[in-house]
Length: 321
Ligand code: FAD
Image (cartoon, rainbow, N blue to C red):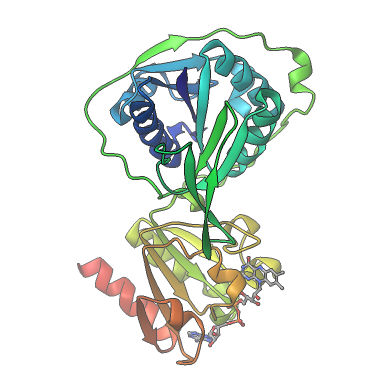
């Protein structure tokens, strides 16, 4: 019996949400009186960085370094994760809730006949069974799920668990599994990366713009404010629908869900579908010229005024801070 935590790599880095999952998995292992190991597929970050996963409470990083896995091929990932879970006799698998995590966890759950709980926001209550709290209905409610299957997969919601890293490092162990060519039936031929930008789902600070900005030519000030703050840029759905901004920046129910410590919404009305993507933000600042804009009800701080006057002032204030 053990806990296995899947760690995603992105752009030569360990994903922050995966490191939260490692800390969470280590804690679950402690509760169950067993050990937790991390699993990394492909290796685009180097052994030294893999060893730092030990900062989050695990002793061993199992690395399947076959370079065909560097591209996030879901079918192959599911096959490898299934095999490693069996090798390790893992009865709990933890991963970060993400689009890759969603695709892989469902397949691994089917292979292992495991129960799957997604969007988990708390450590399990093991006093009577294995009960987890999940965020449901785009963050509007919590659900308590008692998992009765032998094997359990938990997909942790970003920001739901904050581990305290230490200086400890982990042993990186090369792990061999049987990878068939058939696992690569669907091949990723090219990934167009948006270089030099902070990944929106991972971002700790987000500056987001809506239709109130009138046109794509006015995004310079949003980008400048984001640059000054070290923030990612986001937008509302109509903005990406009109091609003012790329689709991967669209925040909301049908777009990216963000969980930053600060979300600054500029010229966004605050429709329910947009709010569904930002409800996990710790602090929300709304800038809107309409005092009746619904976003103000969800805001921690609101500025009523013209974005074209306020944002440049904010940029100056951040620059001189
Ligand atoms: P608007 O509603 O046009 O609001 C613009 C705001 O800018 C207004 O509040 C206005 O007062 C303000 N403004 C104007 N000028 C200025 C200025 N100079 N300075 C400051 N403020 C100014 N939307 C999403 O965002 N994400 C989703 O995932 C999403 N999914 C959807 C799914 C479905 C099924 C449907 C039906 C809709 C979805 N929508 C989504 C659309 C959503 O309902 C709203 O239409 C959309 O969020 C509105 O975008 P907006 O706030 O940018 O534009």
